Every structure is written in structure tokens, then in C-alpha cells.
Image 1 (cartoon, rainbow, N blue to C red):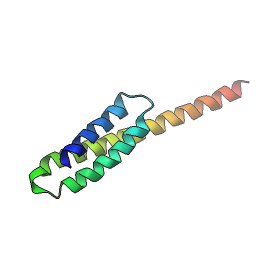
Image 2 (image 1 turned 30 degrees about the vertical axis):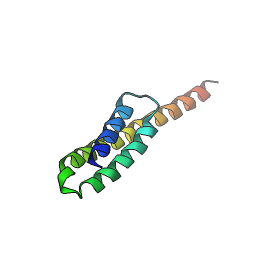
Image 3 (image 1 turned 60 degrees about the vertical axis):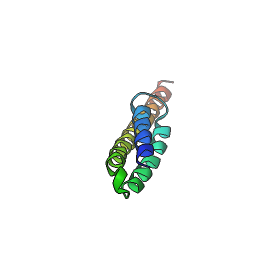
Image 4 (image 1 turned 120 degrees about the horizontal axis):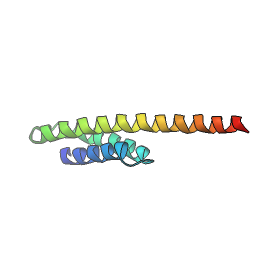
Length: 86
């Protein structure tokens, strides 16, 4: 579970930083990575990689949510500004 959490955390980070428009996918993948990382930390043999996956997933989730909200706010502001020009 630790390796899966790490892979999902990396995917969440990539979706947050590089794949424009897919931040919601990164947020979903990040939540799944957080769950798997928390479950993986219970096994002593994979505790280190599960911790790394948990950290990557948390950071990826937060980045995805922040960028998604910022883009949605910018789109709303632009549509409001375009409506006032008419």
C-alpha cells in the first residue's frame, strides 16, 4: 500500500502543477493516496515509503485544490467582467 500511495501522490503532484484542467483528478487521486498511505503506515516493513506517499499525497491534494479554486475564481471574475462590458 505504501508504493501505491507514493505513486498516487506523485500523480496528484503532476496533475496539480503540470496538467491544466485536471486538478479535480489530482484531488481525487490525492485523497485515495492519503487513505492508502495511512493504511500502509500500520505495517512496519513499509512504514517509510508509506510516509513518503502520505506526504506527497497531502501536498498534491492541497496544490490541486488551491489551483482549482484559483482557476474557478479567475473564470468567474472574467465572465463577470465580460458581462459588464456589454
